[in-house]
Length: 145
Image (cartoon, rainbow, N blue to C red; front, side, top):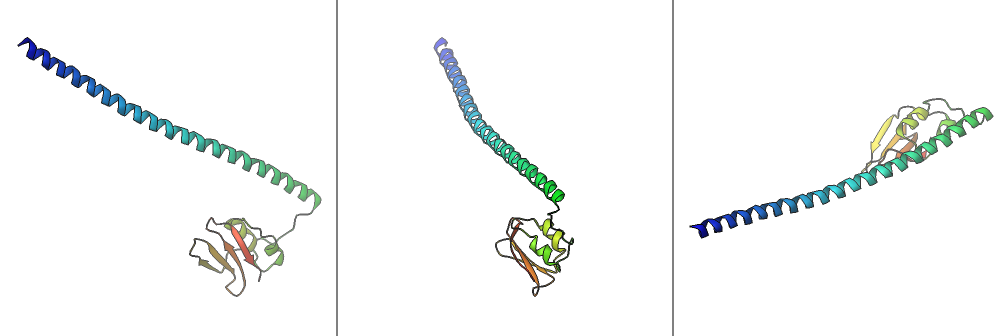
């Protein structure tokens, strides 16, 4: 009887250690995957912080340039939202946002969606001028009326 209990006890102890081994192995694997995920998040945050820093520096330069040009009187005056004015078309730049284009030229008369996700805005129609936007909604090019 003592041998039977001893064998049963050995089996319980062996099972107990096996369960502990499985749990600790799974925890170790989980901890490693969490560590990798955290490292990736930290890297992304660092990249975003650098990008914000670069953008803030660009904004500061542009603001200084704007103040300087305002003092010098070299800022081109444009009529807000008027596609009929040549100076508004001449103020367009690649990379401008849709909002900036609307500020210069006003609402487009017609919009065509492109297969790659971009758009063409026509002022006032396909017969007039047009502005082409990339899929990221920034100006790719334009054609004055």
